[in-house]
Each structure stands twice: as structure tokens, then as C-alpha cells.
Length: 223
Image (tube, rainbow, N blue to C red; front, top):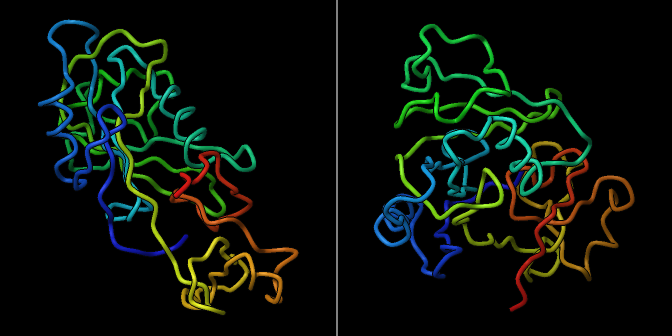
């Protein structure tokens, strides 16, 4: 996956741009109605604990981890129907309120059984693994929603320069090993790359970008 700095993101409710560290507070202060449906506000970031990609979602307290699994697959991860799992991060409040945590959380477990402030690891694909870190930011409320998980904010798109001409790249080559520099290509230069027909994938706003066969599910906004 591409490396890069963590960018600001946009609130999906009002369009305000905020830093990752401030987005949860913005949502709680501006978009949490009194009463309504109890929920957790959850930050998801990756790949790994300090990855450049992040989103904030609210999850109904009776929503299951399987609902979050489906949500993350749809918005960020799904390519080949790989296995996935939630794992407690030992030593954090993510061990929840059920005593000693199992090696993996059961997918039927409710999000409400996790503790505020707790962190949980989520792994998608046990070959080319993409690891995400979920942090329960706060308990909140929302107007009743048709689904258990609702997207509230996401990081802005990151830009990478084409190795051929310097223009903004549209493709990433996942066949270039660990050579992070020189693996990004624009529409005009991608045809000259030796790996074109087998390894080139579109750049996406996802921690799964450039991994396995991931092509993304969210289109890039028109400029």
C-alpha cells in the first residue's frame, strides 16, 4: 500500500474539514442528538496503528462485529472474499467487559461489549494482510439509521506523482516489491511499465491500495 502523511478529512454530514485527531470531537459537538439510538463513535485507521488512511463511523450498540466487517469490506477492502478477524489488543481496554479475551472476537459479538477508549485490531486477508486499528472514541446517540454502521468522515484523497512525468498518478504497481519510489503512473505513462498487464492497479483511497487485486469501491471525486 502507498505510504504518506495522514491527511485531513471531511465530515460527511456538514462537509467541514478537520484533522483526524479533531474529527471525533467535531462530530460529538455538532452532530450527536439527544436521545435517539445509542451508538459508539469509532475511529478506524490503517494500515497498522499509524497508517495514513482513516475514517470515523458510528455503530449501533446492538450492532455486531460482523456488521463492521461487512462495512469495512464494502468501503475499503474487498477484493477476493478473503477471511478476516477481530483481535483484542492486549493491555488495552479493548479486552472489553467480558473478562479474559479469546484469541479472536466472535463476529456475533456486539460493539457495545467493547469498552470506550479500547483498541481492537482487524485483519483482512491472512496472506497479503491489511491490518486496521479500531478505537472506540465515545458513546453517543444518533437518529435511527437503516444500517448498524454509518460512515461519518474519511481522510481526503492522497496524491502521488507519476514516475514518468511528475503528473498526478492514477495507478500503482504492486509488482515492484518494496520499491516505494517509482511505482506510481499516470494514464499516459502506465502503458510503458513492464508490469502493466499483470500487476498494475488503480490508486484508491484505501489502506488496501496496491495489495492483491484490490480495485476500490469508492470513485474519486471530480475536480
